[in-house]
Length: 283
Image 1 (cartoon, rainbow, N blue to C red):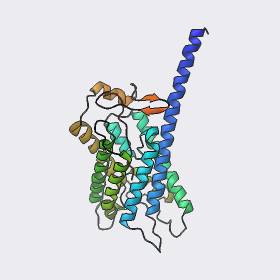
Image 2 (image 1 turned 90 degrees about the horizontal axis):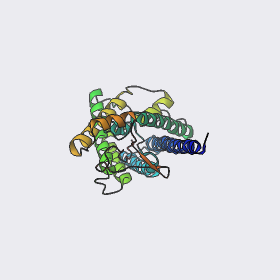
Image 3 (image 1 turned 180 degrees about the vertical axis):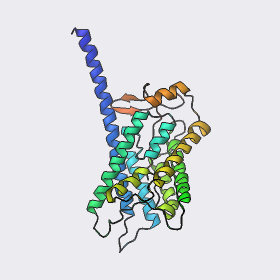
Image 4 (image 1 turned 90 degrees about the vertical axis):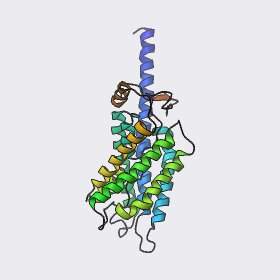
């Protein structure tokens, strides 16, 4: 192989290494963020006989856990930590389908590990239900789905608004955390408040309880889709063409620019085929 061929091959290898490093870092970030979120949020809902959790206590914990996870993993992955948020960004043409699938897999794995860790450190008489989301006796299945839909819709709208470079005014971590806390202040009375399929999935896997588990997927995912359509196509439409959206969806166009190993994303308005920098929900 001549010198030119060696240089070309070396450049390809270097690029492949950088891309693999960025992708693996992003997946680990989603795993870590979701695991930490589930550990603290579910942990705050544990019913200790001497100190039963209050709604305000759980909401504050959700706020702080969300803000922390977003701040820690923002640069590495966009800090989705929630399959509903990932789906919303997929619908809005901000990430590719392969990346979305990988993110969700990492999130579910992280949620399961976080729940298992919590189960392992909790006393036997406290961990029995492990904070699994359930529909209250006085709430119908339809009402539960509707509540999860609305709560997730407001949260995802906040995620888009607080991470859109065209209108960022404050800290996304703080704003997204507040939207998650807002949802819990209402949702706890209906379903224990999920807003995040991974949050419901992890504890359910650990204790093997999947009663009406589908509610905590259908409600949040539907709310996320509606929020993405409202934000990206009604409130703040961008200039992506159909061809660009299809290319981003399939991953056949470059949707991220990797600089120094971290994903650097441009404004939607200045570069429509670039992913908008995302932030997390969680809940």
